[in-house]
Image (cartoon, rainbow, N blue to C red; front, side, top):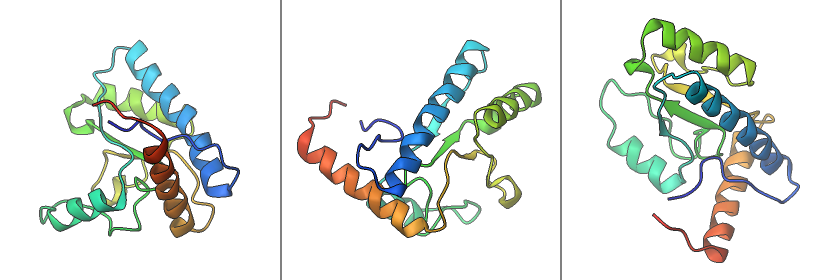
Amino acid sequence: MLPMFIHRSQATDARRRSDEAAPRAMAFINDAIERGVPFRVTSDFRDTDRQRELYENRRPDQLVGLPGTSSHEAGLALDINWNQLSSVEQGTVLSMARYHGLVQSMADRNDPVHFFAGDWGGNPTDAILAAQAALRMMQRTHTWRT
């Protein structure tokens, strides 16, 4: 299993943005756990092949980005079990998200589970390509346990 928000050591802007997003996302998750919110990450980083699979198999009512356009592909987004939380728990999650610099970026498009933890820097394609290159590099140099 790949780690959420894959860390990158190269100094490109896209990789730096994802590196900055990872600590904020982890602090957000840790705060939820410490406060007893039954919080679960249901989706985080995914490669373009997985994004394509999700897009091709989406339900008519499901919002899934085109492959090559998703903030999940850049390691800048996560989805949570939003619909399983009470309204009080949702309020706590929103407060924690704001505190840690995450934005519930798709709530207005009927996707309240989606939290964005980064900055595209004006060019989503560059951010996605950098994340995918980092993933390939890490896959060549690491053995992953599932």
